[in-house]
Image 1: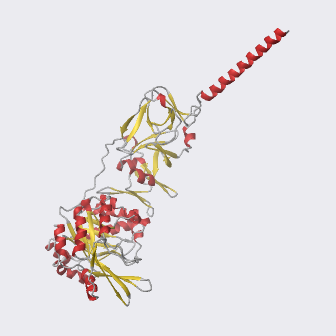
Image 2 (image 1 turned 90 degrees about the vertical axis):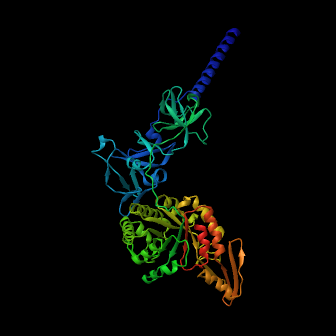
Image 3 (image 1 turned 60 degrees about the vertical axis):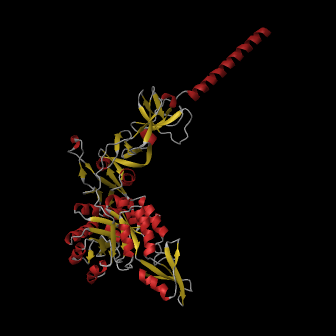
Length: 566
């Protein structure tokens, strides 16, 4: 009996061990056996029938396009941010506009374009669609003007887009049949099966990926994970394109510009030109303040004079007439934000330039709000086309580069206009909360350096002041100031027995004195301070200078200027 019991116990123990072994094997199989279920891409990406997934170079974008009537569309903000910032939409008149160097292309909502593929010519496609607040542009239309390539795939609708030209990406080919999965584990569902020699982009980057896996992008835009051992060794390839963008030409001079702004407030003031010019040396260009925007429909006032232009030309001086936006009754953003008004303004200016034989136009818009920055730049683009086609120099006045004035987009100004004129003054102005220099040396140095980061040197004209400010710090703590000419500034100090002292920090002579009104302070502009500024400008080989304003300078300062610009 004992032997039988022992035998039964041994059989039980063996059976129990076998069950344990089977259990362990089952657990191991469950843990390591690959998941062979396939997850549909439209479910994985959660893309509806009308949506369009965007795979931007090497990642899935948060933005979604739309797919309508067999055409892929991408929202305008994405187009401008990644592919081509020169597309512009007028929401007031429902116009999509694209400016080339010689033409302004317009597409009304509902307008159609036609495919380059002749088999689709009969149908065409709608260029722009609007859904709620979103504006979408057909990618076929975007591609006409932009350095972008893309391929469309179905189930779900998706675009694989290439646009980062000149950059290198890591590619590898598949060794043998492999699965691209939703996560970096063999237990994750399969998104796509790859065959030997299929090519993928490796996009692991800084992302933490389980050891033994690589994050990849397939040719048809599937982003997932696969076993690294199933890939051949990768190699970097530079993304190259043969796209040729139409180049903007510029009307620039083969000499250093020496421009003076001539403030003209009435027709009689035009008569003083020759008298003022007779005291100057080296002036190449005069910019009379003739035009002002007078209505939100794009009309302008004019103080233009044929006699003035002829007299300037007789002196060998070009005329670049100025247009300002200083009319307080006009909201300039309404002019610029409506295409019909903006075009009227452009046409009025060009018509004046042609009628009066002007050599150029000088745009001095200083009241643009940030929200109208894009409209302003579109105005400069469109005006540049009309000026270029008529041989008219286009110069644009801008503040010194600052974070809060970035929307003036000096880089784009330089791309489309001929000259960018930086107003290197008003460092401290009438509304400043503290007294200070109108244009210290460091202010000009920073203006030059920061502008050069955005604008080619030969297109920069640096504005310098012929004026200064007399500041009065009153006993009650209030501050006031008044602008004065170079000679007036010196006269204030002389009349109060003050000998100004040179201040290395500002690169100017400084003086102060007390009166019953309070402490009076002044940073002078004269020959030495102007020379310091001109040395900075000359060293950087800028396109020239412009001086505000003609008639406020000391006559002796022209000898300093002549040496610098000649």
